Image (cartoon, rainbow, N blue to C red):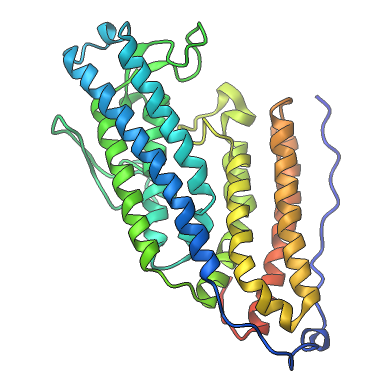
Length: 352
């Protein structure tokens, strides 16, 4: 496949101090960030419906496995068990992308950020690092999985059998396409039931925390400045090492079902929702800067969306992914610099 030509680097053009002050005397709209909270709570309601469906499927699968004495070879011919497993997958597939649409808010707000670690960003004890999850997972059979990793990842690795210790190892055509392909095996019913239940419980806890949260300018600017720069080092790095780029050579056990390009689209949507709450205040002080931030976020989302569409009909090589990552990060760097300018214009202190 032809290698992509290097794309031109974007440069950050800072607005002159005089221009920043052009509208300094104009009336600034009230600090109404209620739309940010409304966006968050509405998406979390959808996420909770997905995790509840995941639990129903996992519980039904567990019941069939227990009735079979946890004989997974026998269970592989149980149509009700396979149907329950499909329902659990559907619940996860509903909830996971919705969380990506609010992750930028959750991860960037101090009172909510622990849930991002628990749900989507935390590592396992085996992986180590600074972001090991703060919980153990107790299974119905009494076994305990110490610090197993974030819950979307544990459920994904169980449902699609990418984590060997979470799987029965018994191959089964779960997706019903007439062959045993990617992810087609029966998961350990004890792990699935526990992981699904905990993901739903933590989703409900996040809903309660979000309901109690009152957004501030500092919260929103901090979340944006903390999240926008992660386009390259987090999202594209995850994508480059996933099966969507490396295919069977990947060693990843997560981000294997939904491409990180799709996840990034969801995150940029959350950044747009956050900035919409700040936009009237920035626009009143400097309309040009506001327009640049708004168009920059929209352009970034469009860029990633186009790559996501292309990915469905072609394969990007690791070398091409490097070039695409550089372009995306350049865009994110420009946006971040302008967000910092906007925060300074409104007298909000944030750190990169």
